[in-house]
Image (cartoon, rainbow, N blue to C red; front, side, top):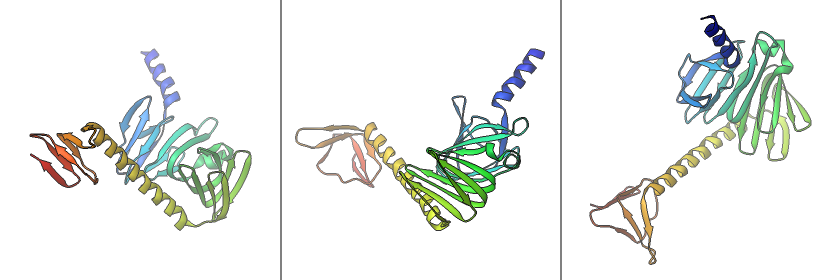
Length: 252
């Protein structure tokens, strides 16, 4: 019995919970030890959890040191390592999307060990509140309170309240905060993601359909449904078959 209790605490120490979900609107999932789980309010979050949010999602996590992380739509985020007792530190990764972070006790006790990693940068803090947005070749961080330190390659940028840093490809610009521009980039990400999902769904629909192209360039469909708006020419519906093209149903 003592062995199992000891084993439990060893596992908890390695993969122990570090916070909980305090707000969830929409859908979000956790990838934990190779298994995907749906997230619900009040669920505990563990170290090494990979969190994914989706369309129309807003997720807020309160870590045990009172750090608050709010994730926007279509965001991929991970708590890489965490401790608020011995050797206080917090290391997070933002693969894609939007993270709004308000630092807690760790940000006060161990500022140099409170970091957020992106594809190309490492962001440190000095008792702060900031937002970081990552999408394809764009990374944009806004300091809303205190100061953040952003390291890109070997260069370090200090951002105080009211300043933002934009990386577009290899170009890096620092200027006064423009939340209208920042929010526009986030909205652009949402629209591009929506188009990407719709395009993927269309490809799946076409792949599932039994489509044969003959030498005379006629397309024969058998019991197929193409749900997106498409331009259709020279379509032959086989006997006793039906096709749905856009909003037009053809055949029996």
